[in-house]
Image (tube, rainbow, N blue to C red; front, top):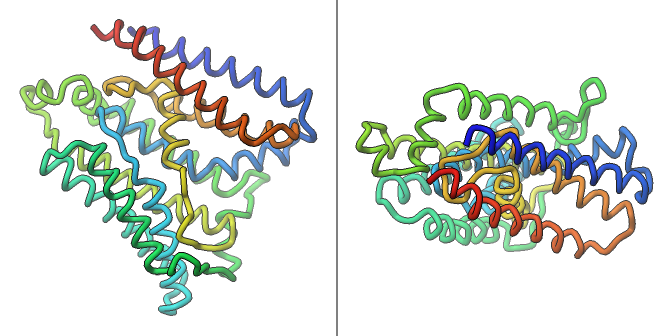
Length: 314
């Protein structure tokens, strides 16, 4: 069991290397520093959500509402800045609070009331997107944001995109949380057996509340990066992001049954998906092929986890 996850990560890293070699050969301007920076920019928001979902899925849970919450946070930021006249910093802070509050709402139903995460987050998936569309009427966009704010999504420091540095810091934080702190061991225990974790005296409710609030907060941060990158806030921001994030997490070796997973695997999973999408576009191949190949990778990862990961746990 101790060697299973590193071997899975090595296989995934090998797949990533093959992708890079193939697209470097058939893609136009793929193997360039500017394209590497573009891949980092385009995948930053999904990577943030995926890092948070690694902790969620590690407990045996799921959060389908992260992308919708990102859209609600983006609309909150734009409306408070333009319509309410708030300073951009205050609007960003409010968007982060909305994200944390959305995660807390999920936590209330899941950790406090014991309702299945799939049901709760499917409901809030619709709730958050519906509120965002209600605020904007489904058509209102907020643009012409301050240049200083746009730097977070369009600028670079020492040649590295700003949001890549922010995501790297978040990655280190989640790595410490899940792999170097007792909280991480507790989350794995909850994923293996919630009843056993309670019997062992672990504060299961508080631990579950923590991961869902962190998921909401990361959705809020991702909304800021998204708005700064595209230069506008709109209700459909983040559509489908949660599905790509979940795919990356599972592809990276985190078990959908809970109890097993790594931050490193999630990061490699994100890289595999991001390079695949970017490479297909630069190779002038059909965009639909990205969805087909991503789905195939996800199904393969789930089957491998079911038939090999489950056996190693038993």
